[in-house]
Length: 182
Image (cartoon, rainbow, N blue to C red; front, top):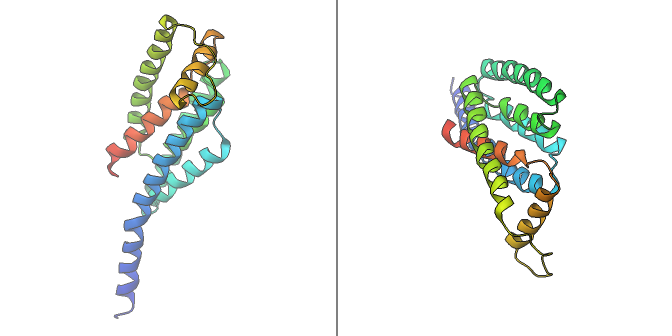
């Protein structure tokens, strides 16, 4: 009789560190995605896959919640695919949102979409404000990171490059993860 109890406790102990670890890794990956999206305007498939797997790992204790998340993520994918087909959203943004939705209950997905939309609005306002800023010269060698990013973003803006919406999605994801209880 004494043998099953330690196994049960070790299983509970295992769950006590898996979820926070998965959430912390998701936050770090989202910060990385935001930086990469600013630099390259692309979101890598492998990062989205890892985020989806971390989302499943974060719900490991509840198979029903995993099933519910997969259903919600599938519905979200279908809706976002239509938006992608119309050219209103990039494929990387669709992948990232769906990957994050896999790890969230329906309320979390709604919060993710809401915060992402708000962050996207702020991002759009920043890009509109860039029209008022002076045209930068090339950033000299040894210039600060902020100076180099400003010069590149201003150059992209002048050429009507798309917004790095992965930044807004990452903000929405990080906000949602913290509000779900890290």
